[in-house]
Amino acid sequence: MQFARCAVFLIRMRFLNIFAVTTLLVFGVWVTSASAQDPAVVNAKTIQVRFENERVRVLEATLPPGVKEQVHSHPAYMIYVLAGGRYRNYASDGKITEGTLQTGEVLYREPLTHAAENIGDKPLHMILVELKGVPGGGVSPHP
Image (cartoon, rainbow, N blue to C red; front, side, top):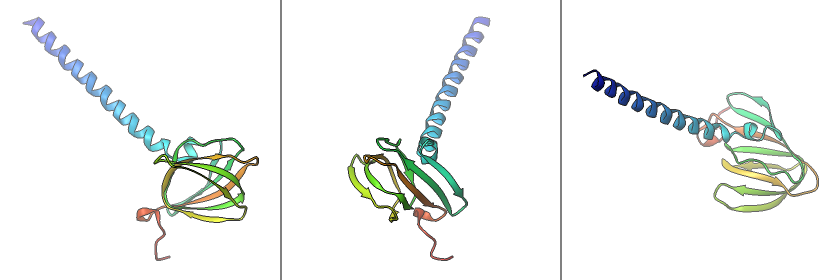
């Protein structure tokens, strides 16, 4: 009788341990994937948050020649190019494109997940303004 109670207790403890470990793993993957997409977190050496409020987040990005960023995501955003150059973009769908950013250029981008690489011989330097607080990352029609 005592042996049967001990066996049932051990089975329950094993189940609880398996449940707890599974829950922690699932939660850990969820938290990691959510934070791993933040450009200021996964590319902390090249991207810094300069300002943030409920409507926008302003990032400063400096990408030295030959450096490739980690994959990250942006909501809808604008880019002001402080120092341009050649880049290679790796989209989340596997598409790879190349282009040139001109100093002084201003661009608008829809939300995306990507990584960028500086394929030029000078640092790329940009200010990114991420739009937030509006569904789809767009701008509210009212001030």
